[in-house]
Image (tube, rainbow, N blue to C red; front, top):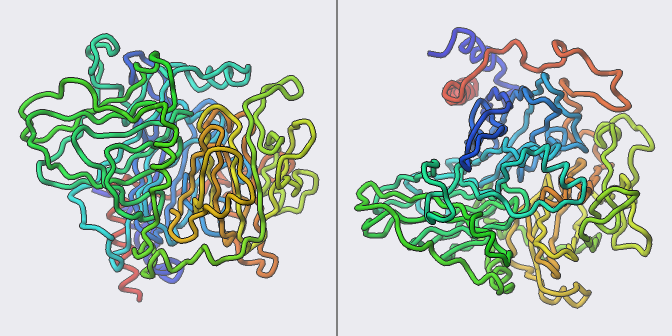
Length: 588
């Protein structure tokens, strides 16, 4: 039973009916710590949340307010970032080094944000110190409001899968390798939900290791939300003898198309409807295998789980379902181009997605952003975008902007590669509020690179092999290019996106490949509404100060938000949401 303190909190919140504004609040209390696991048969330290690896799933509904008290029990600073959550006019909650001071070891900090006008499948992860390589990730599911129907029949159940390349080295060892110029090399394996592969090959997989079993009922349809939360490896996802009906990606409903398999690149999330329409003569393989590799040594790095019908007549056996031809570069590109926005579907709002006619908006700013492989700059290995390797200042950009501190950053990020030596600098893109930015990513590396923009969903309008030119715009999809927050850029190729800059704040544009990001492939976009000072959320009461503002830091007892509130479990938080909804109805 919930404690009396829990119900006192409910009464308190009900008394604040005006402040609640009709949108429910849900509360979580998370402890981030090291836990011991053996995903590949070797005991190692991973990062768990409340002892779970992967962490808990945030299951909320459009416009709900989310309050998460995060306690850092690691031995180094921590921030959690919310991949794909737009934080409307509230980059204070973004959880990256440009917007937040880190949560020091032994400290806690309360995130508070609203999932405003969003639906779909996302995930969270630690953004500092290469920690994502040790875990700390989990899912975010944002459901439609009841007044907006799904553009497909309601599935019988949701199944969330995290696929990731995995190393038995710790994140601390891996980041040292990256700093020294050592390649990450072939992963020790691919995990599905933090668990190693089913023993599909006696020569590759040790006996006795645990593997994931997904239990299903024949004839039912399930929504599989699949997230590539890995470090740097593109993975091909497939389920033996089952079609994947793509219906959503990163907050956008898509034109519904069947795929035998799907390339899911680092940082990307997809939703598929999968109908259990087989005869259950045996179990079936669920596979996540590396793409764009040409060595047989990668065979051991294959993630395999088991799809088990309740009436299955035997275990899975035989060869895994075939992946696409790894040497056919156009297969994956054509597959990506085939993903289209469902312009007739309602999503977070009743009006159809296609009512936002992005193809008719005039572009105000153009950036051609070129990446290069790691190189030595001032004696250290660094990666660059347009010849600049991002240097995080000791004072976060957002705090420097808030307190008008000069000299922390410059708004001079170049619109294209300049004819000058590469350098390390803190250079930002100066975005125009309510402008419309075109960004072309040109990949001069030999591997697939993936880029993510916090605070926004952008339109993926074009991609092709070769060098982008002005004439490439004639190939753009100006009608139903999918809106998402992460896009891939193939080796020796380009990808073009369009971004409506309607969300004021300072937002992180980064490589999702962790090694590229860690060595400097990121930049921030400053979007300031000069007409309405109140357009952004104010400085949070519980803000952490650091760098040039360290003297303002309050002690832990003064700083922690909701420190006297009772700890609320996930089951209690569900009750709390229901009670608050009832309170809102009563007050209204």
